[in-house]
Image 1 (cartoon, rainbow, N blue to C red):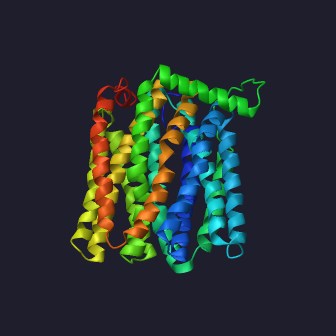
Image 2: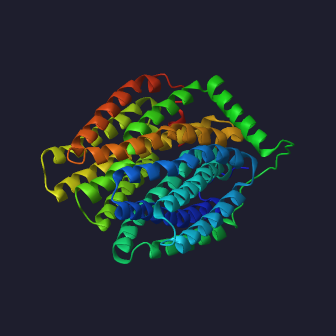
Image 3: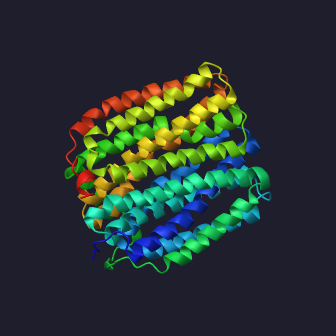
Length: 420
C-alpha cells in the first residue's frame, strides 16, 4: 500500500542506492567515450561506437518494462548492479590486451543494455513507494539525483582521466556498483507474484502487445509524443552526444578537464530543471511543452555563432557550455512532465511497460543520428557551424509542428494534479 509521505524508509534507500550507482555510471559514461576519442581521433568511429552501444538499450528497455511489472523490482536492481560491477572488472582486466574498438563496442553495448533494464525498473517502483500526489516530486528527486551524479561525475572523471588515465575511473565504478547493490538488498518494494505458465518470450510478446494496444486504443496521444521525441533524438540529442566532445576536444583543442566541466554544467542544467519542475509543478502545463523544445532548438543555433565569428576558443567554449546548460534545463522539465503524466494516467500493471515502450521507441532514431553526425563532423571539420545551424533549424520546425500535439493532449492536468 502506498504511504502518504514522500521520504519513507524504502524510498530513502532507493535514493541512496541511486546516488551511488549513478555516480559510478556517470564517470564511466564520461571516461569510456573520451578514451576512445582520444585514442582513435576519429569522430566517425566515435559516432559509430556510441550508436552501436545504444542498440541493446532500445530492445532491453522493452524487456525491462516487462520484468519490472512481473518480477521483484528490488531483486532486479540488485542483480543488475552486481552484473555491472563484474562487467567493469572484465574491462579493467582486458584493457590493453584486446583491440580497443570491438572491446568498447561490446562493453558499451552491455552497459547500456543493463541501463535499459534498470531505469524502467526504478521508474516503475516509484508509484509503489509513494502516494499518487507525491509521484511528480519523487520523479523529480530521482531525476535530480541523476543530474547531480552527472554534474559531479564528469568533473571528477575529467580531472582523474587527465591526471591518472582510465584505470582509477574503472576502479571507482566497480566500488560504486558493488556498494549500490549491497544497499538495495535492504529495500522493500511491494510485490505480488504473478502465476504465468508461458515462457519468457511469450510473456514479453503478450505484455508489449498489451501496452501497444493500450496506447493505440486508450492513449493515442502517447504514440504522437513518441514520434515527436524520436525526431528530436534523431536531430538534436544525437548531435549533442556526438558533437559536444568533438567540438571541445577536436575542434577547440581543449583539455579533458574542460570537457568534464562542460559535461558537468550540462548535468547542472538537468538538476536545475528538476528543481524548477518541483517548484513550478502547479504552473506547468503539458499544452505549453512545445515552448521547451523550441527554446532548446534555439540554443543549438546560438552555439554556432561564435564559430561563425571566429571567436577565441575559450569564448566559444563558454557559449557552447552555457547553451548546453539551458538545453538540459528545458529538456529535463519536458521529460519529467512526460514521465509523470504516464505514471499518473497509466494503470499500475502497465506503468513499467508503457514507460519502457516510450523510452525504447523514442530512442530508435538516436543511434542513426549519432552515426550520421559522426561522419558529418568528420566531413565538415572546417565548417562545424553549418551542422549546428542545420540541426537548430530542423529542430525548430519540429518544435513548431509539435504545438498541435500538445494542444490536443488530454492529460494536461497530470503535471499539476500530481503535485497537489
